[in-house]
Image (cartoon, rainbow over all chains, first blue to last red; front, side, top):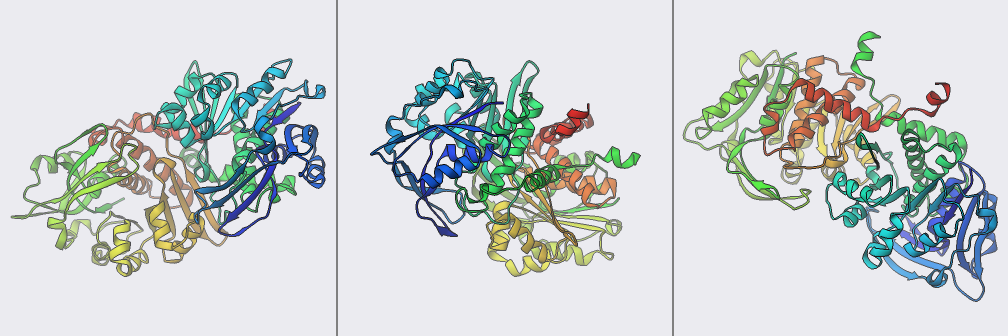
Length: 315
Length: 315
């Protein structure tokens, strides 16, 4: 099923307690596309870079099944650049440099060959740009998933809310859910956010896993996906985007948007994110084997597995 | 199976964003005993109070199946008193008053009728007192579970470590696991703590659930019990102790200390804790119905339930 991904393709320079990088390929859409590519190909990318972006990195995306027809290359301009340093416990980070560059006036152009889009992933970007993409698709996709961040809640709340209204699944972290709803309890926050329009809400809690909420006639349904407790977290950059890519990739590949399948997609996304943090940047996402992914998903299932006592007694 | 619980029985004065209490019954052993009493009776209590402790509160414990033969009442002395204020998000609290009173020189006396102890719960207390209880039992219990806190890591680390050596299950929170091990990763922390002696480690993560670790020949086994996302948390006091009481009560009632049964005990303890926080102090623990507990456990099971895709395809 046709999957379109929009978001930033960028340079990152990262420093964690375990080392630092020069400018490496980064950006929400990069992580999303690479992660989704393990579920289905092609992943149709809508993004913008400057002419400083290396052809080799574009080839890298293409080798992973990313269709770059929708990737605009702006001559004489520079790619989006972000640089940050993580705290010793990796739980917080300080932004050193944010250079919007080409992102400042990004006008997302949808190639005709993308108009068959059934699954649309709106990676973190200005909400007005995310909305433009929805508007420029002739037919409304079957499922629209949107990721965003507190930055837009601070400076473009109204635009943000009118974009959230148009999507099926919103994916944010716990602090963002609290900020957006004004509620500390995540259950109350979820009720308020689902009232804004989306059918589903994913609240990402980092090392504590993710919650999937759905409000239907029977009331509020909640699914809790744990995070895999990891021995080493090397670099958390891109984990949320990798999660989102795995999530929508799984849904697009299975073409099933039931709540049960959304749960499976959350587990798959969580498994993909657990790989992402094992190495710097996108490195771990470049050469994953299907059997590694399957084994990781099995670990997630085992992590919460409880054999009911009744099953034991009758055994 | 005979269960002995040691810990504080005390007065608490609590303030949360939802209200405040005068002196009410509190203390680790109170919450542990009440919680365990829903799994089996009697719960044999070892604790100390002053003559200010109301007979009505002792009767309350006895009505819930708590054997108070091991509860010392010190004439002319006052009960342990703790007073605290919770932050608006309930995630932190400030201690206003700690009066050790009778706890300052607590000498735990084990009644003869407690010597059949098979399951021993060491609630948070000075580690030398916890150790004394183990030493005063003629036969080593089948399972010893110990709860402790950062306070003892700060002021009595050596005593603490030599007590931890003697127990089967240690229960602490995530920050305490990090402090005790010097490791930020909870997996690394668990390895180090399990090397100190316990066969099992429970790391409580509050609203993020609990992890159960076990190291055997096959390596490190991990179980992740989610916490139930709650609409309202009224008062977190005693949640950890209620968890511990539910945990050991379940194990004592089923008399099965396999890893599979420990998982079920963690879920039961989590369910009990989720009730505790719904009202002030011990209030919610006083009148629970078996069907309420069962329904809550079912909610925990539903929360993480994923129907495998393969099951769907063959259906």
